[in-house]
Length: 162
Image 1 (cartoon, helix red, strand yellow):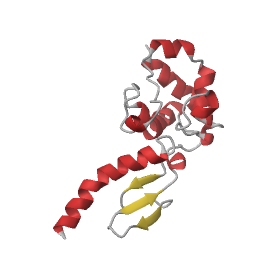
Image 2 (cartoon, rainbow, N blue to C red):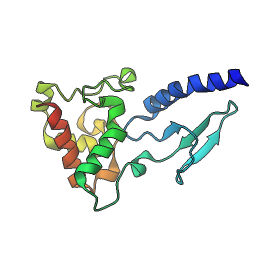
Image 3 (cartoon, rainbow, N blue to C red):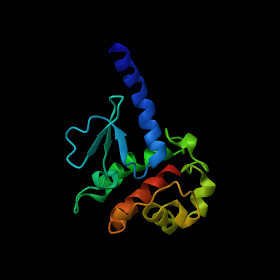
Image 4 (cartoon, rainbow, N blue to C red):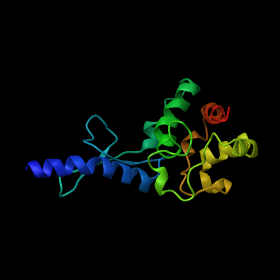
């Protein structure tokens, strides 16, 4: 029983990272945990005692209509972007190592100059493939009708280049 607990405890962080890498940070739909308190979660128990909670991260990370766009953008960046781009925007998030090509480093002055706000907005809403970048950057169609939040995300990305 102790060995099983130790194995489960040591596998959990690796499984979480693997799930993030497989599903994509932008719309990560799978996470390891108990699922308690998440009414939208679907639970599946493996034979090894690990509970996998499947939830729609895009809905969970999208604040209710009428909320502050800046706060919404911060929440979305933290929940969808950081895994690949990193909290500091350097393209060094925990899931970045398995991505080819790697995530954009938002501090790169050449990238900042060469990329328009419209291109960034399209990448955010329609995904990387829509702008000739990595298809591993998932689309966020739930943000299509939230231009203020998308604008705040662009502002956040531009701030890394200053």
